[in-house]
Image 1 (tube, rainbow, N blue to C red):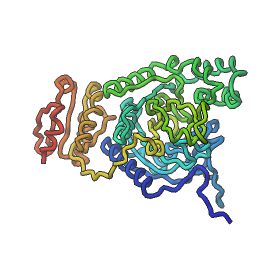
Image 2 (image 1 turned 30 degrees about the vertical axis):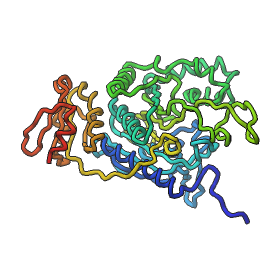
Image 3 (image 1 turned 90 degrees about the horizontal axis):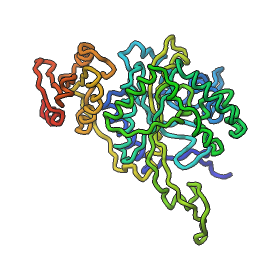
Image 4 (image 1 turned 120 degrees about the vertical axis):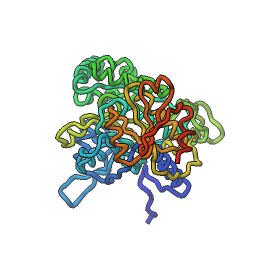
Length: 451
């Protein structure tokens, strides 16, 4: 009898690799905690209907990739293929609607998809996820993107590319789907066999097709941003405004829809900028390419620049109701592919765990101009290793002060329109009510001197 082997597309993590993943997860959690996220862990196995209803019957994940589990009970179970549906289920089941909104959660672990194993893609995959539930505000989208970028930058990545799009909501998406369907019907004979089915059953998935045969048709397809209703246009405009304020470069990708049915409005992906593939990977045949010549006993291939997708996510305002919630719960999230992050030459192999102190600062913003600057202020403090709490989805001074008082935070940082213009913030002692006006570039230095 041959010794048992790990299943295809799955592997053991030995000491060195284990520490790499542990270091990345701890760094990612540290960044998330600075921005106000809290941990959650959901079961590895869920009821299959969670994914058929939430992720979508017509998606590749549900149709082709789910590992379904035989059970003695009556419920049909599946290994989790992604994280968002399980977190939303936990939100509903555990009554998180009654908690202060939004609820900001992070998680990490293994997920399972029965797809073709390839470079950076496994059947047992590892991800770090972020979710914000209970806020429809554009700053929630911007927060998810900013935290994602910060995590990847702290993990060693310097040349990141953010692709973003808006696919609208139920008020405007139907007209776009109709236009897209009519366009593809005219080119149906030139599409792959999967897209012929998608034209009838799931037209948005047409833009997610990876078949080279469909590429020219996809590139000339109608663009979703041309069909957005006024609220969706405004939401997307605000998200881009936050990105510009944060100096995050982005590209609007009209073909970006993501592979899951629950997305609405904002969708995005973060990837590395294209770089040549490592030679040893090419010779080993990991990266497919064009054959060019013989080099001894190995066959050489043409080295093409490779862009590696590291993270992807978006908004899912209707998912909770699909899963049985009595009302819609707006949400936005991201999944970061830990396998790809850790395997890249850019990954910082010196990542080590950090010990976080209890935050003594609470950030308060007043007005849209201050809200635009808020994530930048938090990031300044994060880089200075100063933990800070916030409630960016709230607008009034009283509601934000109320949260700070409830949490017994000793100091608040207050920024309004005047402070934005002056490049300052107000530091208030919550016990004595005394306050000082401090220049933003001196903020971290001032806070470190506080007892």
